[in-house]
Image (cartoon, rainbow, N blue to C red; front, side, top):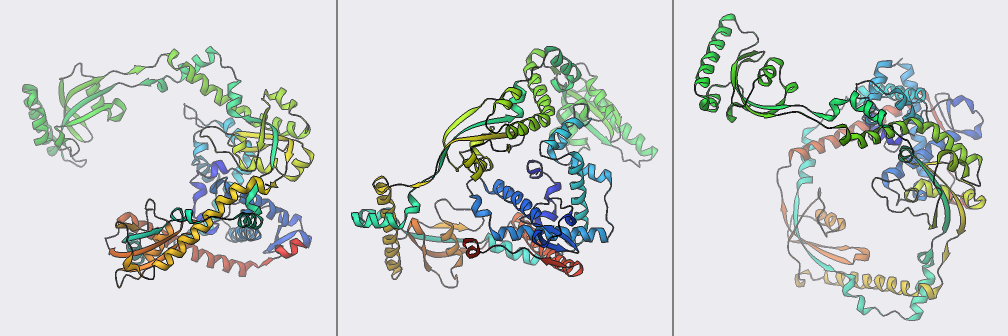
Amino acid sequence: MLESIRKHSKLMQIVLFVLIFPSFVLFGIQGYSSFERGQDVAAKVGGQVITIQQLDAANREEIARLQSMLGSAVDIKQLDTPEQKLRTLDGLVRQQLLQLQARREHLAVTDAQVQQAILQIPQIAALRKPDGSFDVQAYRSLIAAQGMNTAQFEAQVREQLILQQVLGGIAGSVIDSQALAQAAAKAAAQQRQVRLALFKPGDYAAQVQPTPAELEAFYKANTARFQKPEEANIQYVVLSADALAANITISAEQARAYYDANLAKFSSPAERRASHILIAVPSDATAAQQQEAQAKAEAIARQVKANPAEFAALARKDSQDPGSADKGGDLGYFTASAMVKPFADAVFGMAKVGDIVGPIKTQFGYHIIELTGIKPGSQQPFDAVKADIEQQLQREAAQKRMAADVETFTNGVFEHPDSFQTVEDKLHLKVQTAEHVTRTPQPATPGSANPLSSKAFLDAVFAENSLRNKHNIQAVQIAPNVWASARVLAYAPAQTLPFDQAQAQARQMLIEQKAAELARAAGEKALQSPATLAFGAPITLNQTQPTPDVSSAIVAKAFGLNAQKLPATAGVDLGAQGYAIVQLDKVIEDPAPAELVRAAAGAENQALTQGIISAYVEALKKRFGVEILYKPKTEAAAAS
């Protein structure tokens, strides 16, 4: 929930999540006492329970979060494992322990602190109106679109702030070791100069001539590699704020009213360029010092008014403004609001370029000012910005309607599972079709939300009940303010291609495999006498930046070689890419850059902090008591 808000929020990036829950997001655990039957309990923490239902819900959301981080190419089966579920349970246990400790310490946060934390979230901070007031209705719609009400969201933020207090003092107790950071940074900054001898499979492919029998044997041994994926033809509908906005009509009167109320947004203020000579006066100056500075300023003013061509030279000689003196007093162009009022009044009160006024008294001292440029302000006419205003008002209106329309959409696709007619009529949505849809998401297009690019959407389409009943899937949020539903029209299960259709593919795969084996054998043989090899040009490697066309395995091997006696040589099996022989010729030791030392210090601080907090959590387990009842099914048990 609220992933679109959390992932950009300073609030959600606090040490609590980075250090204590590296693979876990808070879920707002509540109501542990409602399920007391042993078979429903995953763990007991300080007399309270975490139910199997809560663990399952938390694990689903955690997997969704990991998918959004790792990308749609990651198969959900790789994430939905017993080990992942145990990690989720560990996170829930840790959270409950911290909640118990917070209550023990009587920790609390004020409403003002909660409000301040919420307003730091960029998506919420952006809801301020042009007049500075907060758009409460847009805030409620934003939270509702994420499946929560504002009370639930604010309670969750309050809980997170309290848990942050529990860990605040512990995380702050870590003492940095600059010596360790310097050593780590120095190692990371080290460079190694190598030369490579590469044995590429392509150079050996012509030697591979597989027989029909070999091809058939390879095919039978690798049938899983010749699968035609399952496919479905589907109907689908999409509800989005952009689509809603397109159907909202903004009248010319509404656009004009917005323009008149926000003229400043469509105006460019006047700018002026000036040079000045400053005779500074300290804030604690005596009357005598004030008079002395004023007299000096008046003398300079008379001199430059008599001979304006001397202004820049006198500014370099006498001005006490370190930011402009070297530039002949030039301040560049600025608006009236950028300067203190007496100075701005003087500059914007001058009639023409070349005018000189002063001395002008400000809190900084006495200024002699020359006007050197004028840029008049401008006002965009209404007709030039009318279309932009209409689009903005459409988006704002759509955002306010979104919560109600999401409810209509969700209910409509559920209550009428055999048709999209209800949502088509009520929300004016277009029913679309797609054929040969697979579980693999299509490449996403920036700026658009395509359901066929959403892993969550496709998982719902290919869920067992969806394929069996061919009913509308429940509404799936595929992007912020974008929801979709689909219905399977036809389905074809995965099938293995027959040998005659897979033969060409099998031939190519077998040739590549055998060629890689020949390349590896040739490289291993050549490694026995590296002096006879023709190495390539020297390449400088480092561990912090990838080197083009050099695999990470080669870099790792190069930095693993003993540099006491050079040259040092080793072989690297590159798998399908063949084999490489690495010769280390030179080690380059340079001082570690400051940013690398800071990064090393940060990593060290994080590791130490994580260790301290882990020890603290272990102490809390002993204090409150923890009993883990959930036992993941083994593969053998699952099979039986």
